[in-house]
Amino acid sequence: MAEFRKSTVAAPVVLIALAAVPWLAQALGQDYYVTFLARVLILALAAIGLNLVLGFGGMVSMGHALYVGVGVYAVGILASNGVTSGWVHVATALLVAAALAVPLGLVCLRTSGMAFIMITLAFGQMAYYGAVSLRDYGGDDGMAIPRRSDFGLFSLEDNAVLYWLIFLALLLTLYTMQRLVRSPFGMVLRGIRINPRRMAALGYPTLRYQLVAYVLSALVCALAGVLLANLARYMSPSYLQWQVSGELVMIIVLGGMGAVIGPLYGALALLVLEELLVSLPLPLPWGLDVIVAQHPMVVVGLFVVAVAIGMKGGLHSLLTRGALDPRPACAGTVTSKPATEPSEEPAC
Amino acid sequence: MLTIENLQKRFGGLTVTDRVNLSLVPGELHALIGPNGAGKTTLVNQLAGEIAPSAGRIVFDGADITAQPTWRRALLGIGRSFQISSVFGEFTALQNVLLAVQPRRGHSFRFWRAAESNEVLVARARQALHEAGLATHADQPVARLSHGEMRQLELAMTLAAEPRLLLLDEPMAGMSHSDAESVIGVLRGLKGRYTTVLIEHDMDAVFALADRISVLFYGRILVTGTVADIRSNPVVRDAYLGHDERNA
Image 1 (tube, helix red, strand yellow):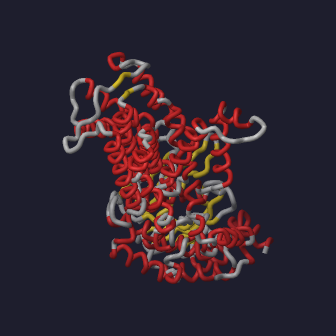
Image 2 (spheres, rainbow over the protein chains, first blue to last red; image 1 turned 180 degrees about the vertical axis):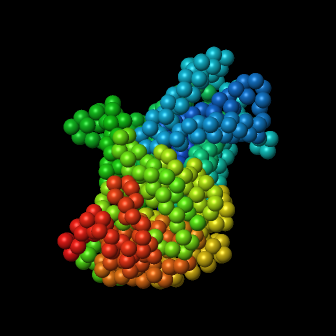
Image 3 (spheres, rainbow over the protein chains, first blue to last red; image 1 turned 60 degrees about the vertical axis):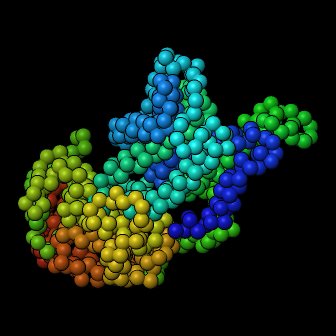
């Protein structure tokens, strides 16, 4: 409940602004911003999915681009073969993602920590080379997707409609995740992150809960992949590169992994900053503007480092700082004292 | 109740549990004592299922549980508390106890409604907090509780799961004298209701609480007996208690 209350100020403002993007872009005559922000929302969606295992489950997966890729190629391959129904695209993507996530999750979850990172990375790379080997679908160059998914009710050919569909998917996912992390399942998952031994001793088969979380997060990423294929109208192995997995992790850390909505802030900050540095000449003295324009990612990197060092809860904690209860900080000192001087601490 | 048959655990060349045989009487409080490194925690970890024994059997209520995973043993009724406080600091006290009672409802693959929305479980959790004297702290994040209160909560969680066999690993570790006194009081109140295995260094507490005591020394049970037996046993005095008395 605490997380929800804290974010009630920042979240509606951001979400309403995002809902209005197509109108604003139209007023400015800049349709480009619709597709740009649609891409941001898709990455945010994938990161929100990944955050279920990373932030709430404590499992650092470096291979979730695999499931984004499943979504992209499900749309691409089906559309290339004349299957245009969006419902079939979504159903196929989710089924294939689940069918992959169950066995892969079972293997990955035999490990934890660094080994878990390495194994998820390895599976991600296997999927990448798998996509490269799809010669009929463009090999390592990728291939254009003939047309967007057809959901029957509305046409996605209009970028604004596609944008709102993506936004709706994001909203529903946010709401579902918000409920999920507070549900019995969510509490068990978070408990396993904090202390898996204790949870097993309480009677929880921890692996099963972690596996279900892993599969759920894979499904969200596959959905993001379906939307990405529609936006880009292109399938390419580049969507399965490990850099994409890394970017998702970065988005989560930047936005704040303790909150469901954190990755949305992370995606917005990261991609908007990138975009601004590349497209807008900054009025900086001493030739710094040239350096920034030539090496925008260096500045982005510095920004990420600054947030990672300075804000433990990411941007989410910055946006909600005003509403934060200041007491936890001193509570930490209170609880650490008896641990060091146990015999002198009076009973409370 | 619980029978340990010829249990052995070796780590490479080191034998940490050496042919241990022990049979618990229902309702007894059985203390495990012994110097550091005697293998007390390793033995309890094997009973809880965290470590697989190299040989031997563990039988609980007539069923061989030697190969059962920890969580299944917990559901069968083996509850344990940990040496260090293993409460969940970012949850409230109520949420902590809810995690302890939730498994009794079957699986927790419930994704939609908040964990606190099940009134039966919440009532049971509040009752457990009340019994532990933590009712007023129910909605506080556990990180704000004192060390002693965390210990009480830890015990409340273990009891809320309604175990039949309690494994208590140094429940008074790191406690002030008054806190330890209150835990001894709680444990005395539990006597007879649960079969309990207690690891404890504080000899006063052990002698005050235990029905029977087993002395572990280099992985072996040196002797098992009543408090009086153990106090008067010359071997025990040499190996363990004598040392303790010199310090005191």
